[in-house]
Length: 191
Image (cartoon, rainbow, N blue to C red; front, side, top):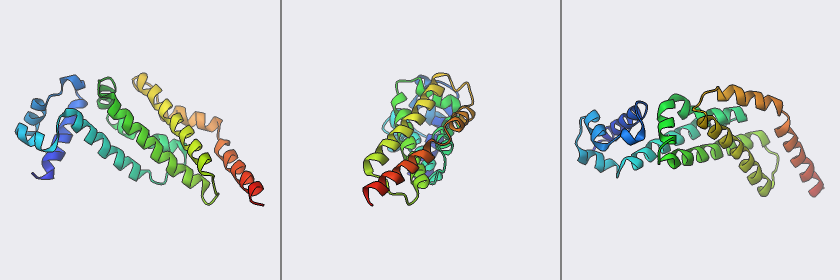
């Protein structure tokens, strides 16, 4: 089967998710929208949750690649929320469904990867203990996830980017201070 059929199925599902709740999307509706038979659907996907997982995974992969060199936490947040901002209704429909975990897994992965990229950029050549690096990744990843989950719980009813930018401005020197401390610790441990 050509991959365009697979892409057409994914596009149809995403289109429907932007129109209606997850519980109202069926394989029958998708194949009718695509003009294909059920066997073609099942050739590519086991079921709708598998289809949804594929859509989310492929978007996550694209976002991670696009933001491979994030140079601020604001850029990390932009990466982690891009799909949601572009597909607001679809994300809210998935978030409110029993398949919410699929989106949350995507969110955790994207937040982790963009934070790792950001910290690699921010620290540059400064040596960081593995334990410290893991703690920083965890801290900033949790910050992003928490901000995004709160935003989703409010039905995305505020501009998350501007709110996060304001918070970042209030704590602007935090990362610089962390880098400085790591450098001092490294210098005292390796005189």
